[in-house]
Length: 196
Image (cartoon, rainbow, N blue to C red):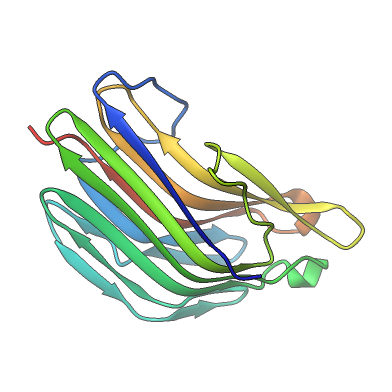
């Protein structure tokens, strides 16, 4: 299945807060990373307003996962990360799907008193497409043919501390015990805070 989804969030200084794991940074972005059973892929093409202002990642392939590479750019007003040709095969051994994503982009723009974050992707297979617009924290289960859930794909994870900053992860895959794998994969991360 090929599709393109675009979603956005605009945050002002009066934004409501939501559960989160880490505070947003002034301006950072990366393609993603992985940490699951016997596999570690560090953040790919990370950039930050404080440097490096841009980065390029080549293709990285580890058992069960491939990041196809991409780029990032961090300026005083906008941070962006773009990845391509992602593939997750780790669930095949447990009877699960092969997950592919041909392209994806996350951005975070800064302005006085507010920020806006956007993400988009194309060429998704192995995961059911989320609805449009995508609800915050939308979960799409990854199942075996008998219906058992091996992992959860969580879209549109937002961190809104309430002072205008935003943190955004486009997609996180959480492995469940039924898969025989523990850990997570994250794709498309960015965060930024308003300009002074």
